[in-house]
Length: 522
View 1: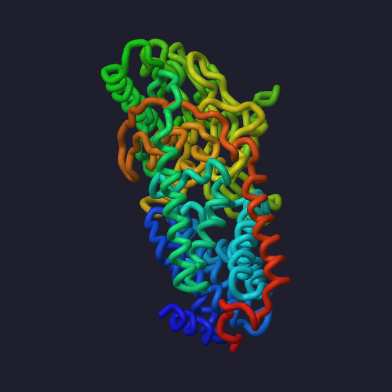
View 2 (view 1 turned 120 degrees about the horizontal axis):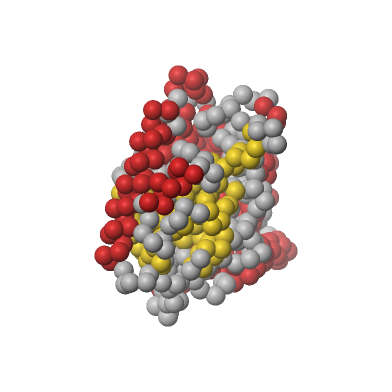
């Protein structure tokens, strides 16, 4: 049956081939969170490879790769449209074009693996070359034009902690490489596919065994994560600021009271508010600080997302920062972190404003903070703050000083009830496994969660719900292989794959390759 299915892909030409490539690319997005329909990749990836192998010219192969990547990103990023719907009167004209326009340049990164597959010999050389260059392109996507490594193919495994354990060795990119090789096995024949499934079973068994190892000692702290579920369109309205702030205060009191009943005496209590949860300048507003402190028991801390401002000597506004502020129960600021990796068009205007598109409230650009730092907290391990999409960058969430835990505060209210918040959570979960650090996540409309250092979800609050999550802060593991090596770890795998492709090219000819595909017809 497999050869007959692949034969269908090889017979498509012209615009039909482009449309089919777009369609199977869009279908591949079903493997992403929250659907995790992994078996669909056993159709779409072999189908793409068959189409690339049948392409007559490299230009045709590149176009098919572009169409596949375009479809993959249109389906995977459709939720961006919801951000425009928060102000339809202003951005209605962007609704039908924003996602396709963004997905097209992102789809261009699939041209590189498509060309690699076209030029590689059929069989293992094509599979390894395609997978290696795909992951290399993903790594490139993480740095080009400030970087956007969203929906890495390795996130398809984020439905459970067991298949994520390999990220401690080779990161999300290494998982992605294994994913693509596994997905491509049907093109190599049924026996090879069965052998690959056997290897997968062994890997999953070893991964499950890692979850049974001795747990690290917890630091004796309880987290109280506040999820107020305030709609984005109501977040910054002048008449909503005081009620929104009061909602966070009330939920904090409720959560602290619950935590005091649940935890042993002497446990450090830490309340966490999402990104820009405070509608006031919490780090410099004495009234807001006093009100926040009154919601905290003695000795407790509040880690709150807020805007921070710096003023010039003449009193004019000099800079704005998207920040995290740590307050103690006396209302004193114990630490501050300013977001370093800002979102283009959301937090600042690139190209000096040549493209007049700004989605966030306000007319002034945010300024970038100094980079990855730890925030020392009295009585707690130092925190590694990550605001919004700073958490999606593998190998870039920990700086020179290793924190005791990661703290991701975000405002996913922009994306409504869609796949976007689930995809964001999956990226955060992978960072915890990669670094061997527990991670706490506070999201305005969800999904808030506490994740341990092996990627297990300790507790979570669902999407589009208001409430408080009370959960212990798990302990940290020693630095993982990936934490020590960073992107060099999956990079070595890519080099090994490319060396194998070179060896196979020298030893295998199209005539002698038992896995040779149907001759190119298009």
